[in-house]
Image (cartoon, rainbow, N blue to C red; front, side, top):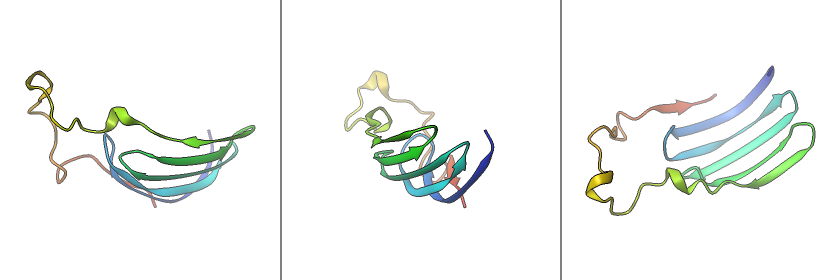
Length: 85
């Protein structure tokens, strides 16, 4: 896959993301995300594809059960940070 992208994304790879991207990656694509990896996208890759991205699996549970708690979750200050410019 070759091409170019322009825009910005900010957030953590396993949770919250915000931003937009547009570009050419073997076809035109544009994406916008807001919140916990929820948002909309539209892209052209050999045809139009558009839709809502409700990736609920990445949202933290409001009250995790003790068996679900982990000491290995990074704090927001130490989480994987992604910025595309």
